[in-house]
Length: 213
Image 1 (cartoon, helix red, strand yellow):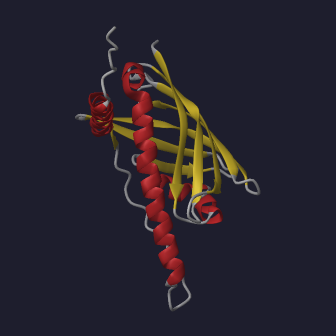
Image 2 (cartoon, helix red, strand yellow):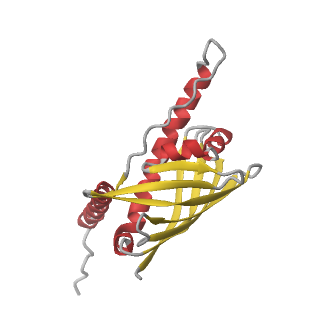
Image 3 (cartoon, one colour):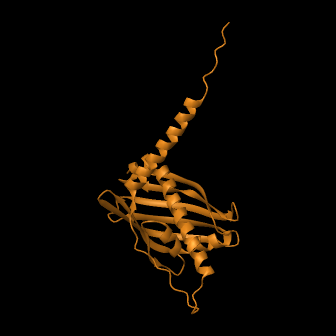
C-alpha cells in the first residue's frame, strides 16, 4: 500500500490576547467552524471527539471518519491532538499528531504555533506526496483566517452584550467539503509567484565584472 507523510511546522499571528486565542483553540466547536469540511459527530466523556472530514476532488467527495484525542496544558497554553481515521470504504487511512501552542505575538496579539505530521496510506497517497506540504500550508492559512474572524466576532460580542442578559447560541454552519483542487490551484499560483520573484531578482542582479589583463 502506498503511503506519504507530510510535516507540519507553521506559525501565524492573530490580533487577540493569548488567553482569548487559547480559549478558542480549546473549544472544539470553534475549531470545527474554522476548518472547512470538518464536522463533530460525538464528544465522549473522556474528551475524545468522533467526527468527519470531507475533501472534494472534482466531482468526488471523500469523507474521512475517525476520532481525535486532545490533551491540554492550560497554564502553559500548550496542547496536542492525536487523530486517526479512514474513508468510507477503508481504502485510504490517515493518522496525524499535532502539537500547538499560544504565546504573546506582535502588536499585543498572539502567536499560534503548529507542529506535527500527517501520514496517509492508500490511493490518495500520491496526491498527498506531490503537493501535501503546500496544501497543508494553504489549509493552515485558511484556518488562521477563519480563527481571526472568530476572534473578531467574539470581541464584538463582548463589547456589545445582549440587553436581556442571555447569550445567544453560536450558529454552527453546515460543513462544506474541503475543495482539494481549489487548494491545489492556489498552491500552484503561490509557487508561480515565488518563482517569478526569484527570477526577477536574478534578472536585476548585476553581472559579474570581467577583469581584463
